[in-house]
Length: 196
Ligand code: AMP
Image 1 (tube, rainbow, N blue to C red):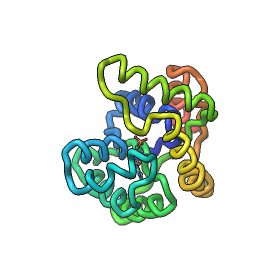
Image 2: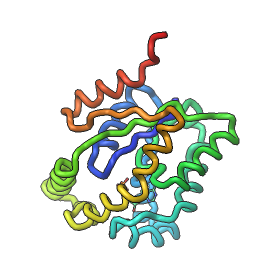
Image 3: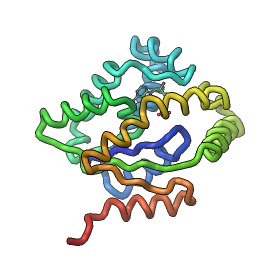
Image 4: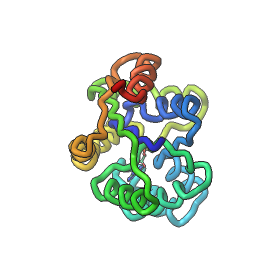
């Protein structure tokens, strides 16, 4: 099963993806996590991405499309994957569509976690506080100012993907304002094939 989890920063994509991994037995591909690993390893990609990420801006499409093309070609993705944080632009969505078509594959669904802006701010703040309380440093982009930039980027560059996937009949909206367990239940229900 090949799925995309879409939503603004703080919508709960990572949390829900981790739960779906257990249920579906397919890997969770978070481009944010992949890029943070590149930064931590000091690779060339990481060095180029760091500044953009710290400022809440997008890393160039070509870097992301190449990264995902390589990752989905690995053996653990043969039964499918859950994409979290990718695609974030129409160019990335086109790139994904082309790489899947080349393999004779298609997406099974795109889930949009709908959460209002005020709740996003509170969640991102909560995530940063939790990291600090655990003695770890919070993400440089989990501050109210950076979140504002990230939300602006989401609205301008990622929201067009809602209509993009709606047109393809793949988009399913899920109420991300519900408690975590309820959102998981809504996602699981949305995954079930509809009775004929
Ligand atoms: P995330 O953990 O998904 O919030 O991503 C953190 C940061 O990584 C983003 O603000 C971007 O700077 C970068 N990033 C992650 N995924 C992508 C993507 N698909 N396209 C461009 N930049 C990305």
